[in-house]
Length: 192
Picture 1 (cartoon, one colour):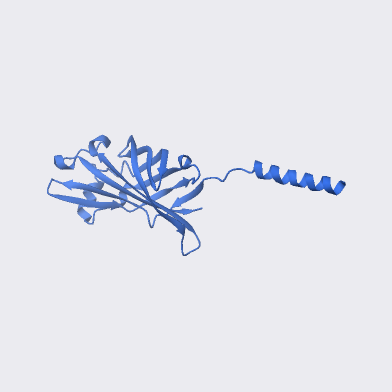
Picture 2 (tube, rainbow, N blue to C red):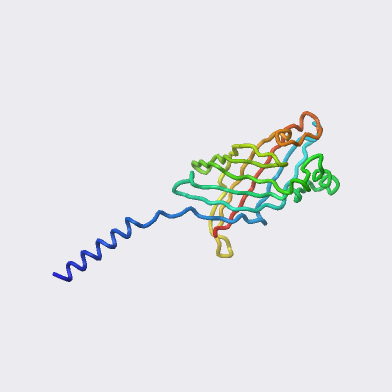
């Protein structure tokens, strides 16, 4: 009788443990600075297209596969890392005419909401550039996730956003075709 009671108690305890077990937490990722960057593309005087990138990106994100709405991201971009493949132009882009990197050495994005379905999603949050913060909505696409050759696990996304330069206090005249610019976000994270 005592043996049956012990077995029933053990079974009840095991059931309680399973029921009370916490749900899996969102996975945490550190942004891989060697494989993450922000691109920009803008008309040049209406004659051509200027493209470049910011090479230094840091931050992290969380991803919850069961509840994507619980996912979030925080990205920091060093504005001094702008690279348009032309040293003199980059010097000008870092000046007060454009990014004013001495006063504003970083740009940031902090998410406030995320929704996802079938690898496509929308990331909402605050973009701070040139000392100005604006709420933005960024369409994002899932690129892939899985184990890497070094025993880690990675997840990657890309996002695209069009902004008006003047909204962020960057109004140096480049002609009417250059009032807007496209930003491309390529983020790869390593699971912690």
